[in-house]
Image 1: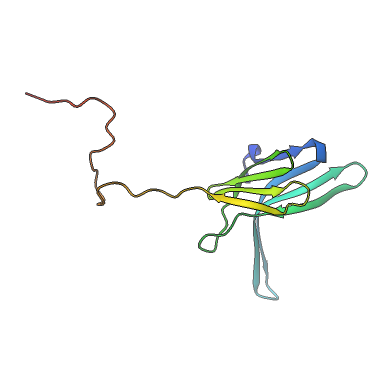
Image 2 (image 1 turned 90 degrees about the vertical axis):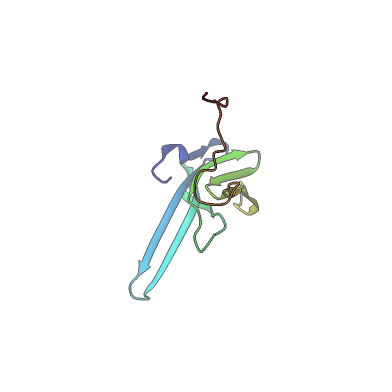
Length: 128
């Protein structure tokens, strides 16, 4: 998603750019890794230059946050979308306003690992 140009958001009323990022940093002296997976907002003006406005990331599942694939501004909210769900944040402060998880895959009828024969879209055929 960090390579997708559609993931970039420019919100002109606030001179705000929102970019999805995945940062992995390893400090060899401390033998410690730091990571951030989410989106970072930057205010960009001629007078002040470029300054970080805030960061958002989606809740981690099994220790990992899903990368942000899209972001959009509606009213006073920033919405970010990942494979895990949608997060609403305050557009001015980036404060979390709520996360809605997308439903996971549903188990198929019949259990087992083979084809159940369901899902046919054409009419039934018989041979005689």
